[in-house]
Length: 491
Image 1 (cartoon, helix red, strand yellow):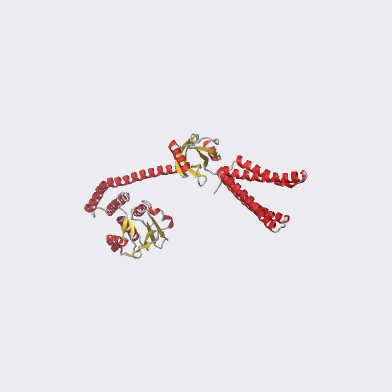
Image 2 (cartoon, helix red, strand yellow):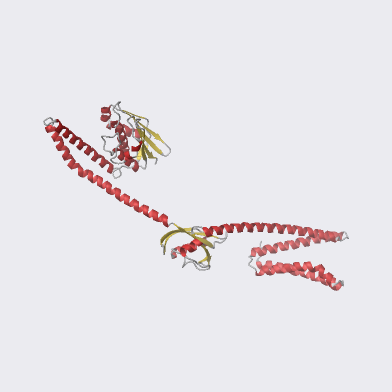
């Protein structure tokens, strides 16, 4: 149990007074009673008096210095232990020698020396530990001060004093951002960008030893700045009375986020307008196109064979153009509806979807004498109708763009990977040159082998895959066929 400060000082003073009394009695005995000279008496007791002077100086220093109760109690305890150990050892030796009727001063000196050596070893060991701890603490302090001074965040060191947050120190970055603050100044009027409610929260968090983070906007002469403000309490394990407030400048991040948000909003508006335009344009074009197609068909029906060959050829061109325009408008309408009329994503049996697509393509397959084979396909989470649209566009493209020498052959396969399901559609056609493999997925773009399509089929596939947050790509070498890959992420 630790002694309080007053009791510790009283114990030390009592030891000093007792030892002083013993020394004064010895001086009186030697000088007055035995008649020894004053010089010899003083010489005999000079060193003990010097040591006693040091003891009283230490007591005075402990009484007036900035030492806590634990420190004073420790000094008093070790002093009492040292005094008692010496007294007991000397008393033991003198007692034994008295029983033997023979006093041996040199043995007393030797035993006292042993006590002194042990005390010196203990004091030296503790002193070395204190020195090492002080050096370690100093190095830690220097590292911390270097971090504090050079941290890119603006930092203010606060002391919680009687319900107020008072400035202890600020780092150069804080002074550069907000100006100099004098030590001991109350922070409430000077902590930038922090309102009264947040200051109350900071005070409560400092007292409770809890971190607190907020965000604020500060209007400086060079413009508006955004900061993440974090309060980090620190202190002793018993009482958290200090804290750091760190200002991290996130202006560039917030401005970039705001710009990105504006860009996304603009893109969303633009996409919405484009979808609306495509939908309206497709509907508005349907009626005049039907009229053109109807009259062209009438021309072909009524006057086929009655005009010359050149006129028949012109009518045939007109009919074909009208049909291609109708196909293009239908495809454009499908493209515009990918996002607006898509169904929810559910687990789909891809093999069942593929079989339905092959039934839809029976006429085309028979007409081209094509062979379509497939492996067992894994299930996938997707929009079932749009998955069928992807299969149909890729397979029909493979059949329609096959070479003229042999009947086309198409193979469909699927792979269940760790993070996605990947389908592939491979053909034995003329292939796609590398320079065209990226742009064929853009709307109205066609490869060299595509001379009859609308240029929208692969763009629809790309749009469907984008809606599913997947990917589509082609691998091909000219003259060696092409393989289209479509990946759907697992959900």
